[in-house]
Image (cartoon, rainbow, N blue to C red):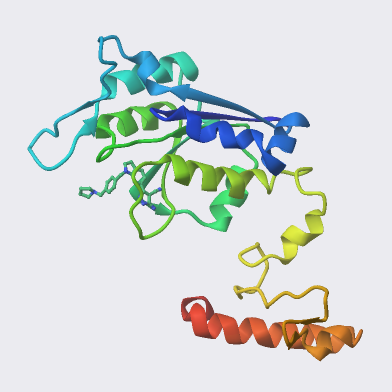
Length: 234
Ligand SMILES: N#Cc1c(-c2ccc3ccn(Cc4ccc(CN5CCCC5)cc4)c3c2)n[nH]c1N
């Protein structure tokens, strides 16, 4: 299966980075195809206007619905198709999680709608919900300037789960937040040299005793999780 990824943004250059590294490999081997679009290509005025003042007052500007609607018509089409998943990154979205990434990794087409300013006219989201499967997602409780960085993060989390993307799929199963995994943070990692600037790799990791190593790693994960993410231990 090839996953088609479309990105609608007034800064489509953000997505040039998807040609690099592992994601670039996924594009090369046909696992994903990436299309970035400039929302301003669907404006018709001299200034290629995409924003206007908020109805009801308030600070900042809101993205006009017209360019989004015309872009949808051109990029996705005018017929409803629930197999198309449209993602609106937004501060008011549902927190994006590994399970959401897992679900999205099986989808054949995803369209990211990257807002800017204070956000997108809500009718755009309401219209999209009548046509496609819509996800309003948030990366976390901090403020970004637009949806592009969130779209890149969601893309990376999803694409790495596509069968055939990762060289060693078994490693995915062991990761924190993977399905079936206890919700623990990952233990500290070490590699050679064994001694570096007066600090040594924990002896147990050099013992070759797999049982003791597993026990040490679990204990370290438990300590780290209790200290940094007590919410995961509920
Ligand atoms: N995913 C994700 C996100 C985003 C995100 C995603 C998409 C857009 C589009 C525009 N912005 C900028 C912005 C910033 C603050 C606000 C809050 N409002 C302003 C006035 C009253 C409250 C609204 C928009 C975005 C931010 N931020 N943080 C995340 N985890």
